[in-house]
Structure formats: C-alpha cells, structure tokens
Amino acid sequence: MGGVPVTVRVQREDFDLAAEVQALSAGRHDIGAVVTFSGLCRDEAGMLSALELEHYPGMAEAEINRICEEAVTRFGLQAVSAIHRYGKILPGENIVLVVTASPHRQAAFDGANFIMDFLKTSAPFWKKEHAADGIERGWVSAKDEDDSARDRWSKD
Image (tube, rainbow, N blue to C red; front, side, top):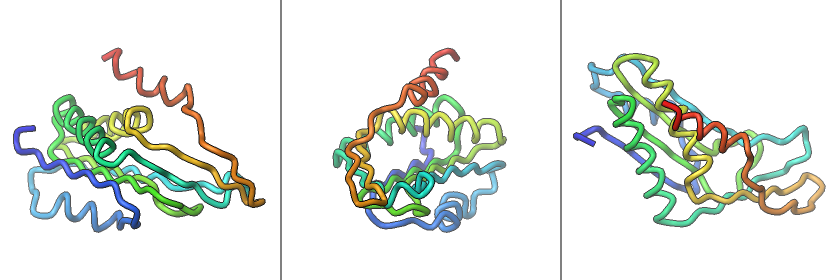
C-alpha cells in the first residue's frame, strides 16, 4: 500500500528477532514505534515434545500479505514484517514473528494484534501435536477464543 514495505515469509528455518527488527527499521528516522510479537512453542507442562506445522504453499503467503496490507491501511503502519515457520518445532523454539512500525505506539500495537488475530484464524496453517510420551495427538482444532479475538475488529 503506497510504498509501505511489507515483508512476508513462510519458512522452515528459524529467524533472528533482533535482525528482523533491524532490517525493518534501519535508516528509518520517521518511525516512532516498533512493536514485536514472537510466538513460541510451549511444552504444555511437559506433555508436548513438538508441534508439526503444515501450510498451503502460496496461499499462506498470499493471505498473510493480505492481512498485513489491511493492517497498513487500517492503522497507518509504516512497515510490517511477518514470518511464520512450518515443519517440526520443539518447545522453546520460535513459531511466528510479527513486527509493526508506525509514528506512534498505539497504531503499532493495534496493527500487531490485528495481524495476529487474523493470522491465527485466516491463514491456511495446520498444527499437529506430538506428545512427550511418543503418542501423536493429532491435528489441533480451531479455538473459539481465536475467532472471538478476530471478531472484535469488526466492531470498529
């Protein structure tokens, strides 16, 4: 939107949060706020050994890009970066990163929240849980609270 840099990557390899923030904000003296959200794999109190994430190649990137572009327009963001991993991810490892930049903090916070709320419900990703006892728990169903978080944005 209007030359605002939007970077979207879906990748197997890990990312470096500090390097991504630096890449987004380097030389940008117009940015007043940068907000990051990094989602990590939890071990679910020792019950989970890994998450396996699959995605619909091409469609996942397109949907995340659409969500980011909407956030740029809605919140006046100056830059956005969104990275989502796929493959087998162990507890403590990064899953997702959203970085938003704007002139003021509230727009950056709102933009990051908006992107995550829609990414969780609209981007074509599927999660399978691998239990610590070796039993595969199967694919994780969507959660009503994720839909509620997304739906709050339609009230604005």
